[in-house]
Amino acid sequence: MLHTVNKSPFEKNSLASCLRLASAGSVILLYEDGIYAALKGTRFESTITDALKNHTIYVLTPDVEARGMSVDKIIAGVKPTDYAGFVDLVTGNNSVQAWL
Amino acid sequence: MSEGIVKRFMYVNRKAPYGTIYALESLEVVLIGAAFDQDVTLAFVDDGVYQLKKDQDTKGMGVKNFSPTYNALGDYDIKKLYVEKESLEERGLTQDDLINVVYEDEDDDYAEKPALFVVSKEEMSDIMAQQDVVLSF
Amino acid sequence: MKLAVLVNEGPYQHQASDSAYQFTKAALEKGHEIFRVFFYHDGVNNGTRLTVPPQDDRNIVDRWSTLSKEHNLDLVVCVAAAQRRGILDENEAKRNGKDANNIADGFRISGLGQLIEAGIQADRLVVFGD
Image (cartoon, each protein chain N blue to C red):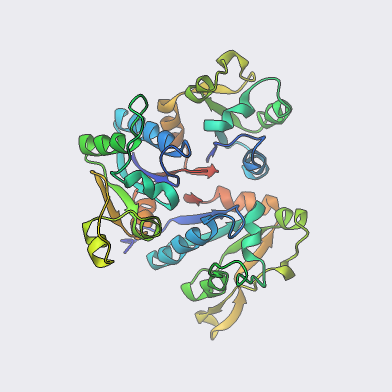
């Protein structure tokens, strides 16, 4: 399953709930305000680093760049992708669950 | 209506009632969706568990109390409402605080059976992983 | 693949409509079929032809209308949600005694059954919201 998270972890519990309930081996895409979780130096960095042990995590670069962040601030192991990649993630996984 | 295709549909509810319209309008999708004979599950996680709180009284607030609709879900053949235990506990709630959603089993002399189940996060995770179509509101 | 998209939020207020648009466009460019884009909750506001956004930024409604025409997309606005929020086509306006209609080009108003059908018929359904 592909899990999408589009809200900031500072604003909502969407990322926390996603990580609590997403099965091991599932894929997570951070986009819109969700990208903030993918950046080095926040209090969520270790949460993401831990999550990487059980999930493949992607971040949408257009949303990173729009917010003035640079792709080299992305936590090591989180894979940058674009809208075409988003489409591939949807078709490449059995189903999609949006954590709004 | 579904031409034989049966998919596992899950409606995920994570928001409290009344503060926003998502609880009400997601229920409207569930009711319409019932006519399509799919394999339907409703999941209540985070503030979504508040949607099932008993004794909702909206008179002072001036909006329609739509919580009786949850009681009626059994009539629409909706038999799987899963409420996450961890979400209930961190809100100081137990199953006793929730609407008793039941359905009548037509294969068992219309005996009344529970449709609402409190499940652990591990069980909820497994249930979610099995779904074909997930609608989030 | 056949993809279905659900948009839960209105134009400009949330990024949902933008993200849904970019996703839909990328899917079409990759040769996928978009079975339906369904607009629910405040998402129905993407279907009003009366927006006059600033000229120096994207026109969200027109963008959907144009994409719809170019690719013969089925953009469906939920009738129940639309009635609550005042999005009407000619029929709905007449039926409900309203003196105007405002549905945008390329959109049509229909029931929630269209969303369920999209979930059944498409290979994937992606939700954009808040």
